[in-house]
Length: 233
Image (tube, rainbow, N blue to C red; front, side):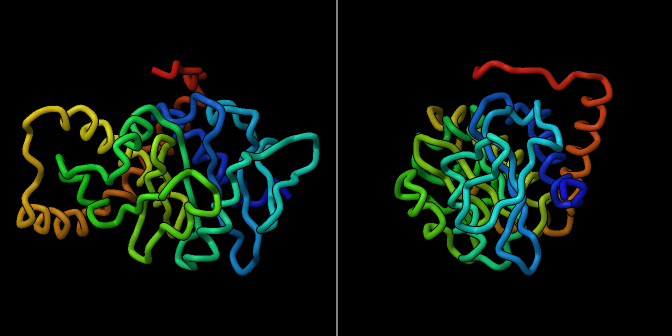
């Protein structure tokens, strides 16, 4: 069963996110929907992303959190099937407690547009009312690609694993800018510039290229043994 290419997608995303410093603590989860079924692949709770092997990836039914084998998934995993039920266009989900996305989540608002990459999330970021599992998925609107969970972390979604994962590292970068620049007088992008940049990025295949970069870096890190534990800071 774990030879399923979808299980491999989850593992590859875990390793790629780890290279970007988003997998060094317990608690993040990645998933991919099984097409045409009420099932999805996701990762175990007791390993950081950088430690994952194919044996740490499990197939779950919607509504079930029992993977057997004496292993657990996150107690917060329930928002994954909740999102899949709500958004048929979403086939992959990434959630982390990365330092910058978590710091930004304390603002309880979408990231401010301090850079062209932030336009990916402008008016496309939902805010969960709290971190109760039942309240997270309903906060997601049809056009949203990210959810901020106040004082917790962030979620990104995509039609593919590459889209969800590349959005997540991009959101992390945007969050770092927000946390760093918000205390200053730095101006945010004006609406006319924002609209122009959104059109420009729409022609650039940025997310696809970012996912390819993530995979290359993860492959090199695995070969070189350089995916290493990181500190919370």
